[in-house]
Amino acid sequence: MRRLLTTATLLAVVAGATVTAASGPPVHEPEQQDRTTEPGERVVGTPGEDGTNILIVGLDSRAQLSREQRDRLHVGGVPCDCTDVMMLAHLSEDEQRLSVVSVLRDSYVEYAPHGHPRHSGKINAAWKEGGADLARRTVEQATGVRIDHYIETDFGGFANVIDRLGGATVCTDKAVYDRAAGLRLRPGTHSIDGNKSVRYVRARHVDPPGDGGRVRRQQRLVAGVLDRLRNAGALSDPARALSTVGSLHGLVRTDPHTTPAELAALALAVGRLRPEQTEFANVPVADADHRVPGHGSTVLWDRDRSEALWSALRADRPVTGDPRIQPVGATAVGVPLNAVHVRVSDPATGFTLLRMGFTVLSGEPRHALPHEHDKTLILYGPSAARHARTLHAALPEARLRMVRDLGRVIEVQVGRSGRTLTPVRYDRSGFEGPPVTGDRLRCP
Image 1 (tube, helix red, strand yellow):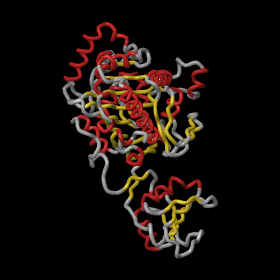
Image 2 (tube, helix red, strand yellow):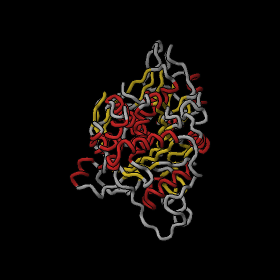
Image 3 (cartoon, one colour):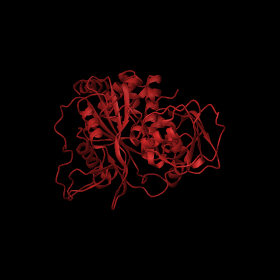
Image 4 (cartoon, helix red, strand yellow):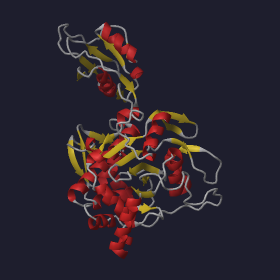
């Protein structure tokens, strides 16, 4: 933290008055007559812990968008006036590592004190109840991580940020189509503008579906933007870092205590990092569909693993390679094993799959193949593709083959080879967003 502040001070001296144009106005805090804490009061102790922590949020707010802009960004519907994206970034004290943790928007947490009876709700609704101040303090309370800087934008601002930074690079190994988000991508690498970037980070109805897969795509986009800026030299020296931050004037908002010079210093520090010095993770999840009256489907964090994650950030340690955060051994899969219904031609293989937790049905597979067939085959119908990939994780040497007239029951024809079984476990967050370094998220 001391090194970063020194850099920010030098930048402010060098840049003089010019740097004051580098960011938008401070975020507006809604007035509350019955607050029990003062604005800006910290939930977690006083500054002094290692490293620098930045809370970055994207708002689902469309009040400033015209109908034409909403249609172009494909953000119709009723806004929630809440945080649609929430990332907690940690820059290590020696400025040699950046850790970015995505917080799922439906995470069920207790809100920080804000003049109402003690209550819990989805973390994305904290902003609606108490603006940026409550959102920041609620994250501090839930994680125990001190927030040093707060940055927010909205749909329109995010699109313009991407455009002013020169676009983003994303890639996919299969076609992507999400009608609700207005997103369609062919397999391959794509340079996308701000408009399509909004659609990309909001898509939820692509594989893997839901918020876990969505935030991993958001992380991929961030990694791609950092790569582009690094390769273009946009953050390579103080003058260029100041210019890049200055180009975002009016598009992002910060807390009153975060100066443009500090933003430029952060950008300069991050711009010096190689992809392998950055790391990305999702908060470990115990229940992705925890039902709460009045709130519907919410997300419960895995208590032990999430605490290990936050503890690593507080102690200025890496989040990758820590078995307390991401257990080693069995392969993580995104579908509950008992939801995978399968018929197996070989009783011994079927028994092993049953002991793992798969639902093994009696009877021979209906699509019989010659007994001398060499390779083990996993046959599945169009509606069972995700379940088949889960089974394939347990039989990694088998071949997948789609059969159009098969339903939800998957069939395994065990051959002379490809029958090796690998332990698997249901771990949706470990499957969708395990801790990885940034070079693992880069396009090839």
